[in-house]
Image (cartoon, rainbow, N blue to C red):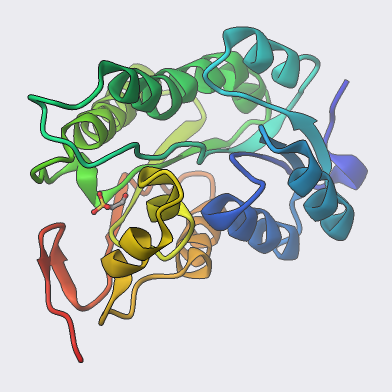
Length: 249
Ligand code: 8X3
């Protein structure tokens, strides 16, 4: 059975091997949480877990069997951070490969739902559980070529709101964190390793960092159990909307 070690509250973070997930893991460790980390890339996750004294298990949120085995025996979860996600491509609906859409929906939407369903009993047992869904400004805005990703993040927004209604009266809070442009390997992954195209996304902008997002997650995770933060939207100052970026230089 996985219990919080030494009485410390347990936080579970998905997609924890890099970027926002790794920053959240580091920050929650500093806040005194015991950690169970999951990601597909076991080598990176093992190194981070050793650094933080965390436990880890391999996890592919898009694979229901992997989700079940990751969550097996986990008890008393104080915080579940559904961070695993990402975008593939920037193609119009007309020509976007259906496979890209399927991947985005499986990881961003169904993976989040599977993890949440699996850990709701453990969140409730903790007496004051918190689900943090790492969403996006793409949950509220759309842009050309972003259909698969924005539709998936809109779904995350709808699921977050639905859960809040369905769980009302039970000791589980749901916080949706919606960052705009964050400099991680998000764009590199979106553009299948095309570093020039990925770098152009952040050109002339001071983007948010993974630590900026982790800071907000840590704030939500350290509020008293009666305080629910529904939705937190954060952007670089130079990005007024997904498609309205004022670049310098
Ligand atoms: C990433 C933000 O604007 O690239 O979640 O969709 S955006």
